[in-house]
Structures are given as C-alpha cells and as structure tokens.
Image 1 (cartoon, rainbow, N blue to C red):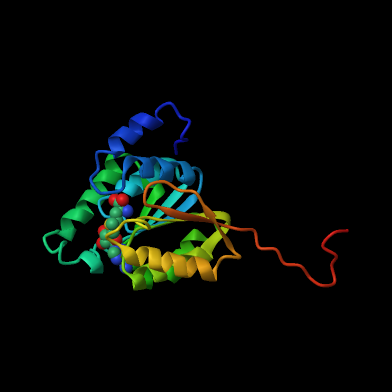
Image 2 (image 1 turned 90 degrees about the horizontal axis):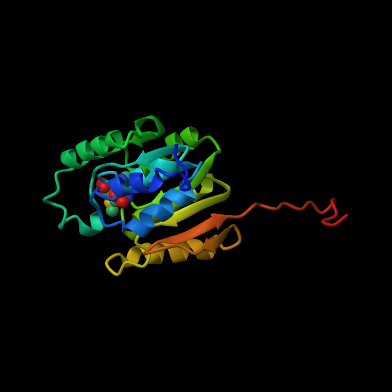
Length: 210
Ligand SMILES: C[S@@+](CC[C@H](N)C(=O)[O-])C[C@H]1O[C@@H](n2cnc3c(N)ncnc32)[C@H](O)[C@@H]1O
C-alpha cells in the first residue's frame, strides 16, 4: 500500500493513467488521495482505471462489477465485448501488482448488498459510485452509503456530466433526504462527494453540557 506522499506515487500514477476510460487524471489522483489507508467499495470498474487509482493507496478495495455495460448507453456499447473488458480488468490490476488488496465481486450491485456488508464488516471508509448511470441504478447504489463509517466518504462520478442527467437527479434526491447525516465535500472534475457525519444521540436524561 502506497501513500500519496510516497516518492514512487507519481510514477505509479503515470502508469495507471495509461489504462483507458473517461475518468480524468485529476479525478484519479483525487480518488487515490481520499482512499489512503481506507477500506473502499467501488461500484463499476470497467477495465480497472479507477480500481488501480484507488488500489494504489487503499488498505483494501472491493470492486462490484457485473461486466454488463450501462442501460443508458447500452446501444453505444453493443460493440463492447465484456469478456475482453473482464480480461483487461484482471490484467491491469495484476500489472500494477494490486491483486492482493483488490477483490472483484462479479455481481450486479443491486444483488450484492448483503455480501458486501459482510465483507466490509463495519469498516467502509470510501464508497465510489460509477456503475449504471440511470436513476434506478444510482439510487440503488446510494443505498451503500448506509455502510459507511462516520467520516467515511461517498464520491459519485459523472454527477455534472451533461450526458448523464440521471446521476445528478438521483444524488440531489438522496442528499435532500440525508442532509442531516451527510455533509457535502468539495470534489474535482465531474464528481460529487459527501462525508458521513458522526451520529449524535442525546438521551433526555443526560445533560448535553455538564
Ligand atoms: C463507466 S464504467 C466504470 C468505469 C470505471 N470506474 C473506470 O474509471 O474505469 C461503468 C461500469 O459499470 C458496470 N455496471 C453497470 N451497471 C452495473 C450494476 N448494476 N452492477 C455492477 N456493475 C454495473 C458496467 O459493466 C461498466 O463496466
């Protein structure tokens, strides 16, 4: 596991940056920095570009990826061979020597909640959402915020991307309902991010200030 301050970090980043996909370099480095030392869940991994940025610094990364493409752009992806995408994910993660700290959960995220809850066992420090970009999928993926520890971060890719208006719709709806538990963080690129607040329970029999 590397730290962002490590002298080899930027040469590792340069190599990861060769993996194709539209997550840009700033977003990748930002993910590496917020993942440092944390247990992370990524939903939507494709060929492993974001998996490797996160994997450089995370304590442990679980990748939930169904190799199914996205409903909203499925027509554009009809030419994509997802067996090839899967092979590329394994190759990229292995080439960057990250296999020991990255586990692939090859399932649709809507079916994986109980398995992931068990694997993260109360330690989830970062949730990165970049799976299905339609309203139903993003709303479903935001359910995983329930697993975050206090101080844990949820980052959603493509929030401000003009091609994916459903991402912003889902996040705005979710953040309105959860405004007391999550505070907005400044993020980079097209990301939206929030931090889970410490839950404060006051019993009426205990004075708040003694
Ligand atoms: C935009 S790509 C992810 C890109 C990746 N984060 C990166 O930076 O390289 C979206 C991925 O989400 C996957 N996906 C879509 N719906 C999903 C679902 N319900 N569960 C798991 N994976 C899903 C697709 O197969 C696709 O590989």
